[in-house]
Amino acid sequence: MNSESTPGLDVLLQNARRRAGLTQAQLAGLATVSVRAIRDLEQGRVRNPRKETLKLLANAMRMSDARRVELELAADAHAAGRVLQSLYSADLAAPPTPLRPLIGRRGELEALTDRLDNRHDRLLTLVGLPGVGKSRLAQEAALVLHARDRMPVLWVPMDRAPDAGPELGPQAPLAEWVRSLIRDGDRFEELTSVIGSKPTLIVLDGLDDSAPAVPVLLNLLRSCERLKTVVTSRRVTQPPAGRLLPLAPLPAPAEHPAGSVLPGDSLVAGRPAVELMLSFVSHMRPDLLPTDAVTTALAHICHRLDGIPQALEAAASWLLLYSPDQLLEIARSTPLLLVDGVTPATSAPGATLGERLGDALTELDARTADLLTALAALPEPWTVDAAAHAVGRPLTETARDVHGLLLRGLIRQHATEPGGPVGFTVLNLVRELMAARRPTADLVGAAD
Image (cartoon, rainbow, N blue to C red; front, side, top):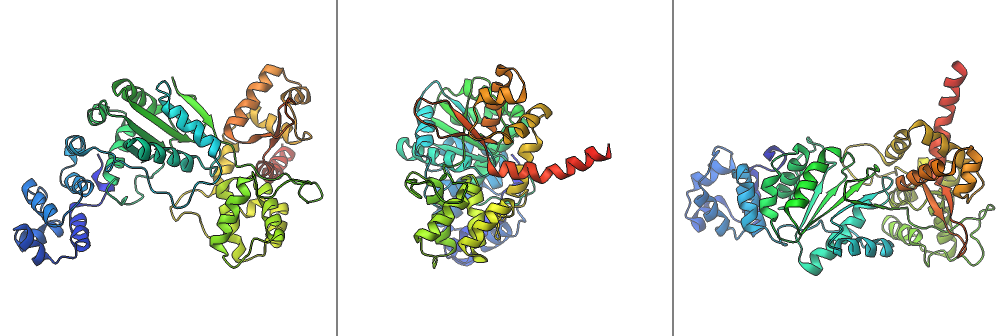
């Protein structure tokens, strides 16, 4: 376990004492430990404190089991397996608390929890575009299992950079320990000794390169018969003995070519993208009332941004500078300007949403990229048969590539009449990204 990525014993003791509202002298009196010993511990002068001393201090500060685990792990990282096994519980291992209710995704949530209830489905991978809501859906499913079944949940952010600074909270040592085992690919026996036969859910959030982790996951699943694992990833990699669950953007209202919503098409009912956008607007601009005109403009913005939750949140931040009608004009002309927002959705360093969406295109092989370019030129909605005819490729080959684009989230199913053929459309933002890259490609071709 990499103890350098979590707060040290000195910091933990100082924070715990301050939370308890005690001075060093008061803590010394309650714990029957000398003031000098407490001062040396808080200044990092003691490398291997006595376990009895830590126990006396923890009792005096009335620390919870989770805080005691954090304290003991900071003092002795090698004690991880022994400590966690003795205190492993649903209270210690819990998913992160959501900041807002889940909007939409009822069908997807039921499908995911049903799969997790099925004893045969033990390795599930949620795939989709960046910002589409994979982590939030996995979080909600984990909350359901944790609350309903008191199931311990090991929530592990796999996309966390090694130098990102300390994680906070009593679950941080547990998450860091599991993350190091998955990344190193060895010592998984330590984790199996903790989980054993207990029903447990592990969520590996942001595991975009799953190949090195597959052997560890399979060994864990074989050794822990009641363990289930959910992976969120933007890359489509079929795990052995696992299932892929693609997550599409939220449904948004269709838009008439002239710019008005189709007759009889409700702006909010059955349109979770608009409902979500309204929730973002209510926090960003509480003075902006959801009149018909405002809701109509927001519905069109949702359409232009494909109902991608993180893109909608970013667009809402622009309402600090523009009116809904002005924002709609930008969404229609240059929607890529909106997807990163005025205020970032997170303070964490890393690629922006626009850059990560662009990476999804960069990762396509040449054949699939050419197919996507051809599909973007077809009248929508188009069928797989129409796509095969237009590109002059065999139907089976085209169907396979279209299926891959659908899993990646670059295209989506189009609402069709009951019994009619299944139609598809290319996402608006994907079209914009392709168009933004086209001039460079044309210049290269001209130079050749």
